[in-house]
Figure 1 (tube, rainbow, N blue to C red):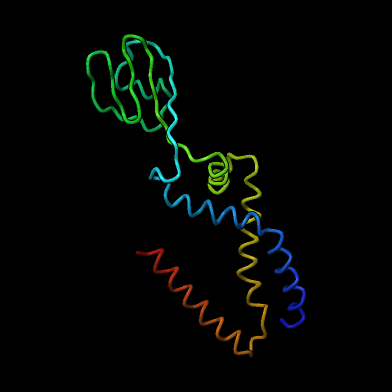
Figure 2: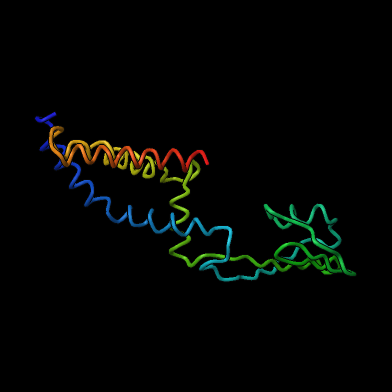
Length: 168
């Protein structure tokens, strides 16, 4: 362990500097994603779409390509649904969506990336790098020192807190 200590410290330090920007992105987007079910920081955008007239209530969501279509009520030729309306006679629909500012939206999209995204391998690299930070932190100090032993107690407390958060 002593032989690897200097090189582990150097790797930890420079990888930390290299990933400082992406860590800030993940920190900010993680905080913003906590409020994803609210209108926090979002602005409304209304879109007008023309589809065929006289579409049945149960098919309006599919015709408008809406994932969360939820019928509310019908008044004459107007059909009202969650976040919009549809005129049966003209085929015109108005859909209001709430979106984050452009840069925050991009940050959140990166945070939630999946294998469908072309740069998902960057997320894997970042995850592996964070795991490296976790493990390399234990190479920062000699095991016999008070700082290392105190660090182990803090690590144990953090592990207990993590388990509590996972299982409550």
